Amino acid sequence: MTATQIGVEVSCDGPDEHTDCPDSAAVRASFASRTARQVRADGRAQGWTTRRAPGQLEDMCPSCTAKRQDEAQP
Ligand SMILES: [Zn+2]
Image 1 (cartoon, rainbow, N blue to C red):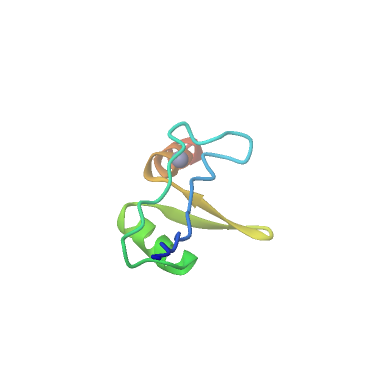
Image 2: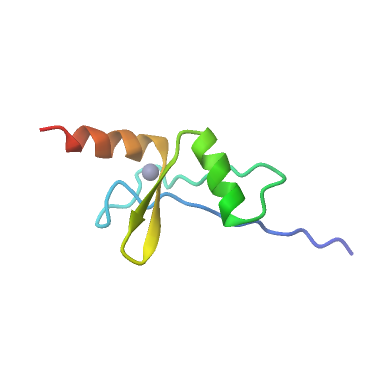
C-alpha cells in the first residue's frame, strides 16, 4: 500500500483579515515540498509574500499582495 503524504497547504489569508481571498488561492507546492517552510519558499518563487502578524503568519497570494500595496498608497 502506498501512502501519499499530503503536504502542507499554504493558502491565501489576504487581502485583509476581514476579507477572503477572491481567488481562494493556495501555493502550488512543488513535489518535493513537504513542510510549511518549503511550501512558503515555493510561494515566494511564485510571488507570494508572508507577513508577520500577532501570533501568526499571514500568507498573501500575488494578487492580494498587489492589492494591499495599492491600498497602502495615499
Ligand atoms: Zn489572495
